[in-house]
Amino acid sequence: PVATPDTQPIWDGTKAGKLMVSKCGSCGYLNWPVGFWCGNCKDPDAPKSFVEVSGNATLYCWYICHDTSITGFEEKVPYAVILAELDEQPGLLLMGNILNFEYGVLAEGLVNGMKLKAVYDADPGSGLNVIQFEPA
Image (cartoon, rainbow, N blue to C red; front, top):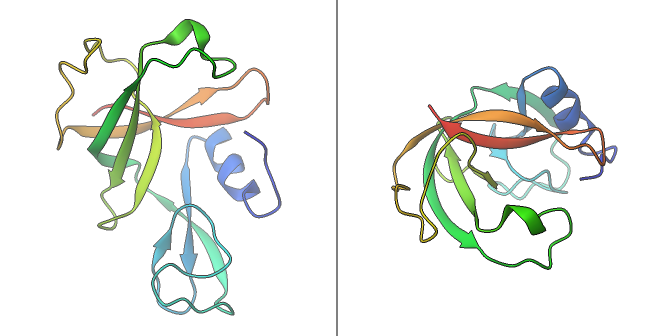
């Protein structure tokens, strides 16, 4: 991951153990990822701010990655790539991995609707804390 001026508040939040998302100043919609305009009202001139959310989520869907060509993840295959829906807003989905949970090579044990919480995994290459999830 690489921090940019638009995403720096997210990375600063992860270092402090906080999950920060972009909030539209026109309609209050929470946006992930950060975009040029709001995903709800589409106002390109709406001011954006970053707000802390709970990090509480529900497992929305997943797939098991067996691809060994992804740099830095060769030794981790197979691993689950998940979409977690944050409790604050329907459709507010974050992609990550699931940590501290044993599942089978075909995802045995993962169940849609499973309660999750955000955790922050240090990325040694970038010095940033990556948002991941574990069972709540």
